[in-house]
Amino acid sequence: MKKWLQKFVDQLDGESKKQGGKELTPVEIPEDRATLLFFIDTYSKHLIETDTSPVRRVREALDEFAKSLLQQTDDGLEKTLFRLRQFFASHRIEEYTYVQKNFDEFRRIIWDLIENLSEDLSAENSEDLHLSESVHLLREAVETNSIEQIKSQSREFINSYIKMHEKKQDRRTRRTESVKRKLSHVKKQLVDANNTMRLDHLTKAYNRKCFEEQIRQQWNLFQIGHQPISLLMLDIDFFKRINDTFGHAMGDIVLVECVKMLKEVFPREIDSVSRIGGEEFAILLPDYQIEHAIKKSEEALKKFRGETIIDKDMQVKFTISIGIAQVMENESIENWMKRADAALYDSKKSGRDRYTVAAHVQLNKNNVA
Image (cartoon, rainbow, N blue to C red; front, top):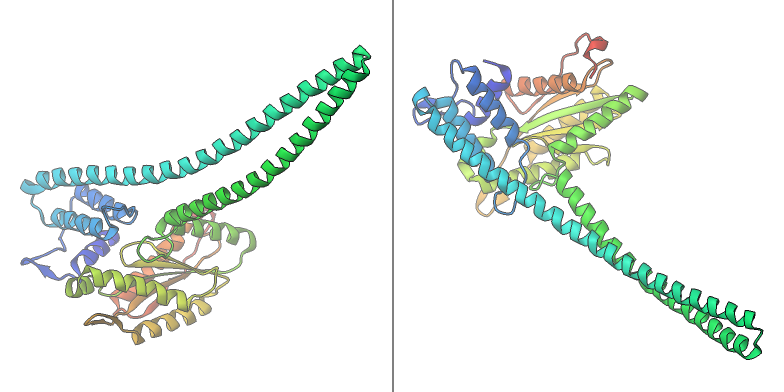
């Protein structure tokens, strides 16, 4: 069985527990089912939190589909696929509606700002036109050589000119204040929208999309300056057991507290803590050699061992497993992440509650992304 598939099965199975008299771990999985499992696993990691469908609930449903695909005989496969198609189509509509609703609201705010600015500019153009007419009348008065007309049009022009500038100054002051308020509101909307796109809805850690942007950015900086960058991949040990024993609400609390503790251990602004899967996290550590990453990993392991999560009458203690990899010369981002992920996998297979340093391999320029 492929390594990623075995890992996915272990995640579903809760360390290969038996459910309903059957083990989830199959001897062999056809390529078409493996492809569907890969799709479910990938989609599950990129869900959008909507008002009506929390990520946790959608992920639970996708896990159930995955289990059905692992256990289902060929006779029942068509029914499972039909249900999966219906679920996927329905949820994609919900996601699209949610994104469109937020986009429409933001667009409305920008449109109101444009309308107000346009009205102000139109008023100024109207006043400029009135002043132009006053200048034209004054010119005609001068051409007639009439002292009385010149005096009259001069007073009219001066009064119009003074009033226009007074109105402009007053309107400019009011417009400046109005624009400041509106821009402040727009800025808040942009920040909120950016956070929605960059942050995991539940834990407020960076989400997978943001992590992929950050690791690309750090990798590019490494190509220029060759400053060390370490990557930690980690996940919560026996997380499914926590969900099964204490409920998913407690599981959510554990995820939130996990991020809080990670941010305490990795407090630098440049240390990015990201949630890249259900209970999987990644931490980028710019300027960290392996020995520094190891020291911080030991600190994290110790902190998690000593903490107890309490909610009402429930108490939960949990640990984490970590894989560590420092980016190497001529290494692609994909290979860097694979080494960190393989190290995490080794930590879990060798007992959990520990870290493993990724193996170094010989690379050449063909490995570079």
